Length: 204
Image 1 (cartoon, rainbow, N blue to C red):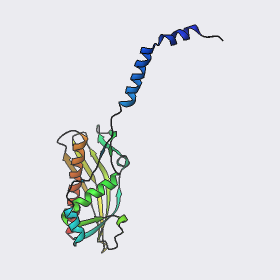
Image 2: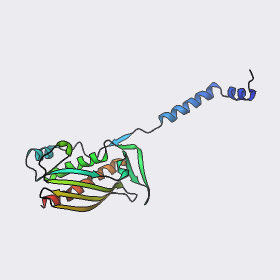
Image 3: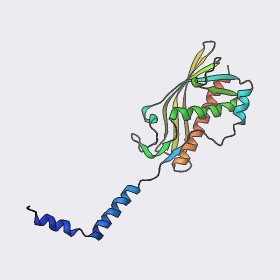
């Protein structure tokens, strides 16, 4: 059996200490991935007393969220932020714990209860609905200029078949860097949107 003496020499050149070092380096690479962090758009610590009171009594209106339309970049689980006027980054280790449309709906529901409005979904099977809400989000992102931008349009359809729509543009500054801060300000932006929606509904 012919053997390449130079190949054998190169193999013998890797002694046990060297192989152990290489093994340690490979192990380090395999375990150096950062842990995954998950975030919620709604606040699970928020007091539910107001929401329960609205459900048990008579809300000003029963609002069915008919549909939430999102841009493709918000259909990802990774949190998104702008890197420039033209670029965005989708995080791979900072993720939403639930789909954006679900988290957004829950946050709007909690905020609308403060206006004595009850927001429901199709899954809840309500039969008597006063208002149908369709929401289109154009952008919901931490901008490279240091603020949260929420913009889009909502459509309201009433039981008396009177429809209306309104565009919205919410811009709130980020007091600090970081994903935690971004999520908290995103909650505030949705609360501001809920105020605007409630104002239109309660004006009827």
